Amino acid sequence: MDNDVIVVGGGVIGLTTAVTLAERGLRVEVWSRDEAAATTSAVAGALWWPYRIEPEAEAGRWALDSLRVYAELAAEPEATGVRAVPGVHADVVLAELGSWAREVPGLRQLAPEEVPGPYGVGVGGRLPLIDMPVHLVWLRRRFEAAGGTVERRTVTGFGEAAARARVVVDCTGAAARELAPDPAMRPVRGQLVLVENPGIEEWFASADAGATGTTYFFPQPGRLVLGGTAEEGDERLAPDPATAAAIVARCARVRPEIAEARILGHRVGLRPSRVGGVRIEAVPLPGGGRLVHHYGHGGAGVTVAWGCAESAARLVMED
Picture 1: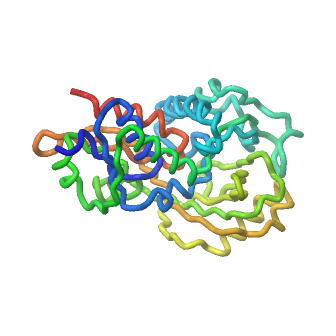
Picture 2: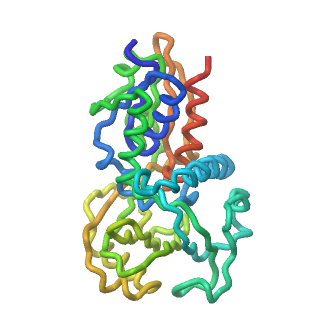
Picture 3: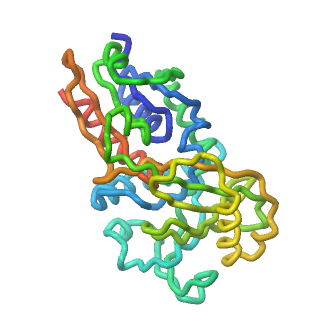
């Protein structure tokens, strides 16, 4: 066989898993239908926070494992795309968060006067904020430096990959609905607006996991990312003008200067949510191979990427 492992899917989950495996000495190839810049991962606002992901206990552990990696990567933000940025998560009570929150350095309950906009409660902290186009390029370079290769390829089934590697890792995100196939997959539409940054240096988020409309803004290099939506079952990839206007209006209630910021563009992506939560599971393939499913990360793929990659890698490495 040409490889020990073929990872199908070139977004943040696929690339992070591929890096983890290649740096353990395995021969790894990534098959991706799209360039990394065209994946759902590239659209992500990418603040580290366990949002819209299950199961809660495992997600908290995966998130904390990833947080430790991002803290190291933030030492080289220009190369990795990872920066440690202060900000506020409104409508959140620290004591009501999962046990993971107690292990986040510096996360604290804010006094009401510290919470901007029409909110009276929130938590503050310095968290990783990832510039995804930069980070995806960095991941690919790190993977290739470990001996890995990337091939553009549209996959209609896992048999072809199984003929060329003893283990296939399914990191196909929303496409797992057809490829696995897994009817538990539920795409959740997210729309963003990119504007010129009017001088905002801190992130802000108010994102109820059950709401279809959320409010957040993230200062990224060269732009301010405004969000957002969480529309379950909506698979439209074209930006909706009325939705974009509502996003800008919600963000401007927190920072009025956003209302006059020049719009640079719009982005839409489908979060790969799954009823029952993330699936990390090994199943046998005909001929003695193994298929490791690794998908269903909802709105927190970036947040849990490194921790989940370790869990998937353990299944790959099993005898």
